[in-house]
Image (cartoon, rainbow, N blue to C red; front, side, top):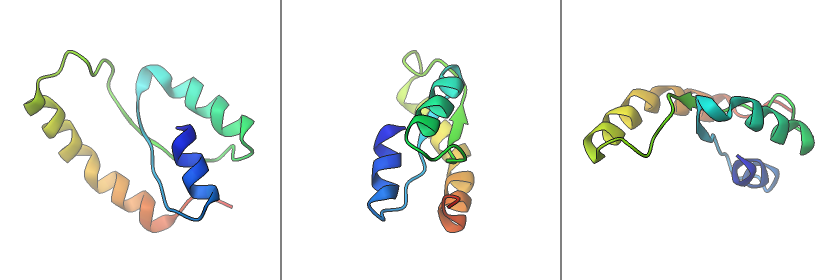
Amino acid sequence: MLDAVILEKAGIPAIPIITDAFESTAKEMAELWGVPEFRFVMMPHPLASLTPEDVERRAGELLDKVLELLQKGQPD
């Protein structure tokens, strides 16, 4: 999350992908860095137990949302 905030502040579009277990942490991080409305995409937790094929499937499921948010940009 922090990497994406820093990239955005440097003018590089970024949409972080987090697991739902870290939603509140991501929101708090965005608030601390002065971007309380920072957008991110969530996926179900946990991730570590997934097979490579499961990770690939989940990535495919998130792709459209990530692209949509990249096109919109982060709120000012």
